[in-house]
Image (cartoon, rainbow, N blue to C red):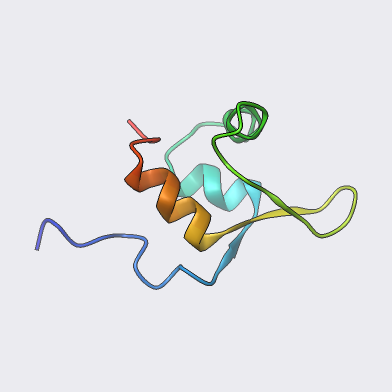
Length: 68
């Protein structure tokens, strides 16, 4: 069962920056900010300060080889 996708079931989940950084094994949320600025991750803005990342966008990012 090595090929089991750890993101299965998260397709319709909204991740915070902190949750996403932990999921992708980044040390800080600054890496998430850099991915957004580079256009590799698409955030959903709830308010001016609150952003979330839709699960299907995160899955597409991972499948495209975004995490090393």
